[in-house]
Length: 326
Image 1 (cartoon, helix red, strand yellow):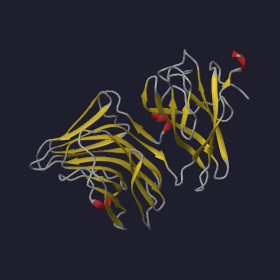
Image 2 (cartoon, rainbow, N blue to C red):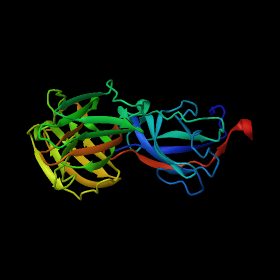
Image 3 (cartoon, one colour):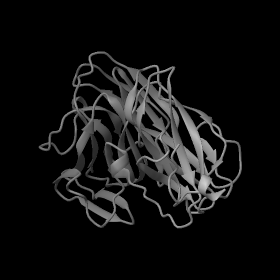
Image 4 (tube, helix red, strand yellow):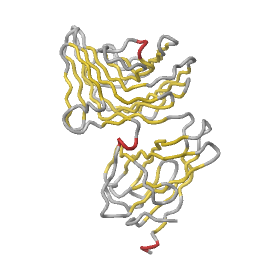
């Protein structure tokens, strides 16, 4: 089998297919550890043989040389890094596919690229909102700033102060919205998958989003909200997170199933009938009040594919050394 030129080490990794069927361009999460340990599930250990900043980590298809797009969600140099890898094809269960992780190239630097990995992606680089990715609407006084790769939305006290941003790319019924956010001041905020792309509205009434979070002054977020164009609606109470704390949430769709997770813990699952086959967009909106302001920070957001059950991590191969460097 061919070998990725310039890399000294690699391990194979088998991914088991989903009983929901085969998938294409599916994003798989892999946690790469710098030190030693036993490879298991999504966790792989490189025994100090990669760069401490993980800049030389690469993934390839089963041919050993076709590089796969990836994005690093989080890392601590010399400790671990969380990668999302786009795998071109995973057959249905009980079949499998194999990918490779390469490491051990001191001259390589990261090629992490969220736009190439996900359906929609933004980690808010630069100093202004990317209008190729987002539509923004405002009413009254509303502020949006981007600093240190954080999108900061705020509205001051006042009943006419509203704004939203909405992605220009969406997903269908088999997908998930993944968002890292922090609330600083509450009144009413939407983090949602919107079932209609209507830029004439400043915020979404209940029948215009399929699922997400809608906050109230009494606590954010107060409910896991499910809505399907008046077909069926439900609100499921979940534990409120704290203010000034970063959280990662996913809002997942699979045909008639909707699921919400926070920091990898499932908060609620809801099954409905009659879900329309539409495109669903990322919607982040805010409404202030006569006696309350609003502020939320977004670190990053992306749309990925999601099926239930997801393809599963299987066995990791033993470390191989490049034939050219033995």
